[in-house]
Image (cartoon, rainbow, N blue to C red; front, side):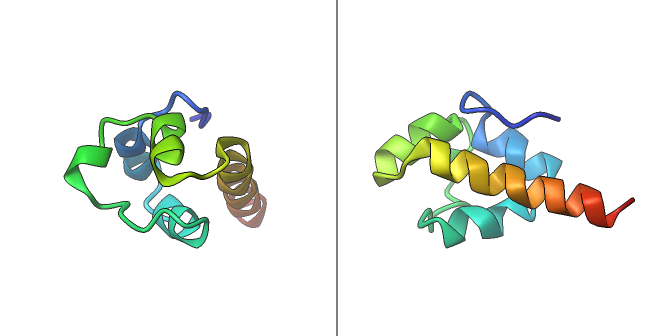
Length: 71
């Protein structure tokens, strides 16, 4: 799965629950909030005043490292 700004929070967390930790480290502390599940990453970042490009880069760095470890 490729994570983009349009990916919903629910889809990301369903794909890899470890993304929740990355989001929390970026400053998004209400990851489990039921109202956030349908929001896109971009919408969630906007609500929290976070730079979506930076958050997306952190998520993709995490996924890349995880994939590298699995090889």
